[in-house]
Amino acid sequence: MSYDSRGLEGRGNGAGHPQQWGDEQVWGSKQRALFDTSHSPAQLLVRDVRGRDEGSYRCKVHFKGSPSWSQRITLSVKGEWQWGTQSDDTK
Image 1 (cartoon, rainbow, N blue to C red):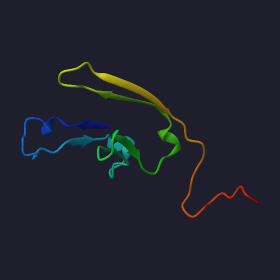
Image 2: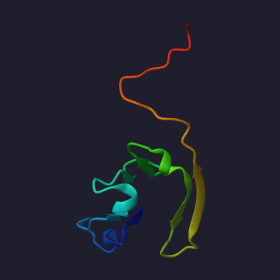
Image 3: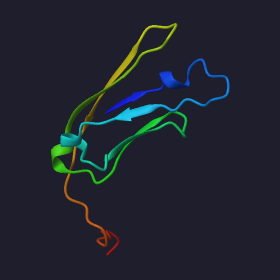
């Protein structure tokens, strides 16, 4: 997943649009992953998480006037979740 906001720089009217890109073989043609900047801090959203999504991910941010920042996370998938099923541990 890649997010490029350079199109937003240098445009006083905010007319630029960030570009997002994700490998279709990994995230599918409907792009199950989305970088959401409407929240602070920004979030990486992954829809329809699958067992094969499990693994190590790295987020790297490049700043114009500051050093780059990098963070590595590990995603663990602990089972299959399905719509319409619910666990009730109160019984």
